[in-house]
View 1 (cartoon, one colour):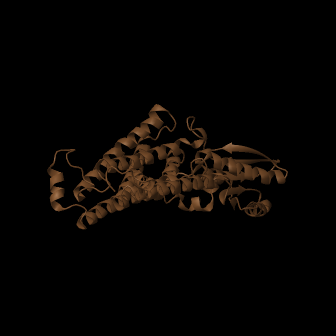
View 2 (cartoon, rainbow, N blue to C red; view 1 turned 90 degrees about the vertical axis):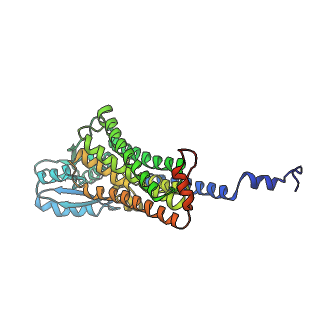
View 3 (cartoon, rainbow, N blue to C red; view 1 turned 120 degrees about the horizontal axis):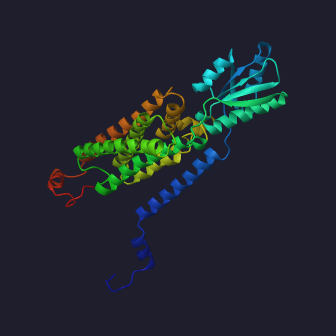
Amino acid sequence: MTRDQPQSFRDELSGAVSRRTVLLVVGVLLVQVLFIASYVGAFHHPTPHGVPVDVVAPAPETTRLVSTLDATAGHPLAARAVGSEAAAAAAVRSDRTAGALVVSRRGSHDTILVAEGGGAALARGVTRSLSAIEAARGRAVRVDDLVPLQAGDYRGLSGFYLVIGWIVGGYLVAALLGIAAGSRPATTRRAVIRLGAIVAYALVSGLTGAVVVDQWLGALTGHFWALAGLGFLLVAAAAATTMAFQVLAGVIGIGITVLVFVVAGNPSAGGAYQLHLLPAFWRLISSGLPNGAGVDTVRRIVYFGGRGVTDHLLTICAWFVAGAAVAVVASRHHHRRGGLPADAVAAISASPAGTLRPH
């Protein structure tokens, strides 16, 4: 074909839309479908599953009531008998149980103990389930919220949005660094330097997030340094993991990050609907992802004195350490297999900023 001959539509189409572009568009469509399926699947029908509750009742009635709660259709509750209202209240206040039913020894009015600080949707679910059982028994109930939400934490969602904001910042900064300077750092040393930049960003991000929710908006107050430290870990974990995916898969690594943190992580995090209200798959993955571990850690820091956060913090740290290690090792492996010739790497290192760009 000469330069003066017009190209066929097929030639124009192949020139405008390459096969690689088509594959990327198909990948985007797949992520979109998974996004819809994950969010709607997690949230379309929140139902209690094995929610732990305590029962305080006169001795002849305790066993029968516990059996009745356990035998409820769908197994929404997992009941156990405790000896006193004080013991049940202590368990609710420390988040060892999601609620308690205290049966009056004299009258027909019983008490339901809940902790909205552990999740407003969960507290409502416990109240609804226990109230239905009590109504069937001809008993009246009153609800006592032992761990109320802070005034600025409407429906207990502030911690969820705080964690999601930190994680979004983490993977966006790593993606930006990859786009600006190449998905795969030019040298192993550059990979380490990039991780250092991520750590510095995470420190600032953790502090600024805590300033916003505590000092500025007054949404989650009284735990500034604990929240700032958690924010640092979450941002570092999300960014290091994103960097690892980019080193392994190039620009497609950003898509993998979206699958992990957005498609799987956000619906399973326990924000709008807590862990015991989610379907089995999302309950299974929740605590293993930084999203779910982070949201529950915020709740435990703000409302339960930090009890039970160790496993969550170890999970978040593991994501950071694994992401950093994979990024460094994969960068080294890539260059040993000829990612860039040694003289090209030397030229990049010696060139002024912006003259040569590593890929």
